[in-house]
View 1 (cartoon, rainbow, N blue to C red):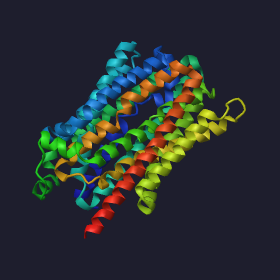
View 2: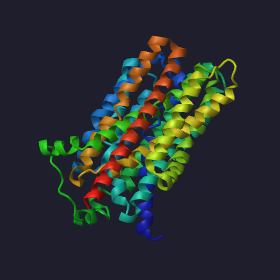
View 3: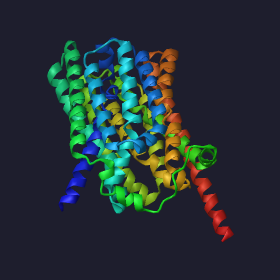
View 4: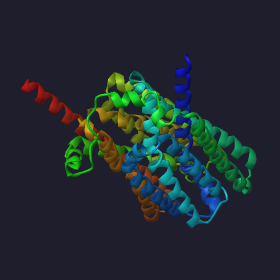
Length: 429
């Protein structure tokens, strides 16, 4: 390996570390929901409202994040994002009041999407050679999953050692876990700032500027017409919306095991760490199967199995069923969820998007597809209010299964429309 490649790979590794370390603290509820409610003294409805506020910040940031990454140094934006999210994590570790936690999550929402999302994708695009782009972006998602799983494993060890198995020590244990995630983000921020090249100095920056490409689109009526007039943009957004609504159930699986199945906090943490390791497994295996059998088919199959798993969790009686069944089903559902996450963007190449509006179209699809960040926590709260805690959790999983089924229907619409266009084009030749 020559020195140039070593520098590129090292920089890429740092971006993978950044992508894998910036979100776990934000979604700590996935592994420690009941402990968070206990330690912070808040209700599940309040926690869901916090995540709705986070979702609003996310949704507001996706579309303009590309503009920001083009206007300012992507490297500096990534470093700033990690630094601010890490400092907010130190604030979070002080176990502040509900209103302060709400402010912290809004800060996380702004600095993990608006200043980070497009910036980290842009850096990977600049680091990778033309023939490496598919590989690099595939490794980015799988590598992010590995980083998250490793950090979750370390977090579990910290939580277990500090708590010693005693619930009364959960306060110190959770606080230690939060500190770990916050310090990791700050450390990666420093490494990014020191070792990642600035955008204009990237070996590929001049190459990209010399490549023939469509002129950048201005945000005007004609551009918007190109975006909203493309039916595949709307179908793609709908597929991601339905799929992501099912994906969102992953953040409630740990809470379900602890409250409905009555498994200990430490055992739930162990199961959810195993579930996190399903992300690289699901992403890699799902990608291989998609290349072999078709992206839509494998995505639809993962949605079907994920929906079936959620129905099993919600309908199988807890009192007469071994706990191992629910643990194994949660791990299986997690595998399907991470397969889904790794595949829904793979349909983008079939959307027949004009190259000049590709970036803006991705932003618009993200805006549609990630609306569940705002909507799903509200749905969860409504179901909990309507049915009560135990039944409300089961009803929420049924909701996820229904959304997955609707996602399958949208994939069928997508595939049918493509086949009709291909057939029509062949007939005209």
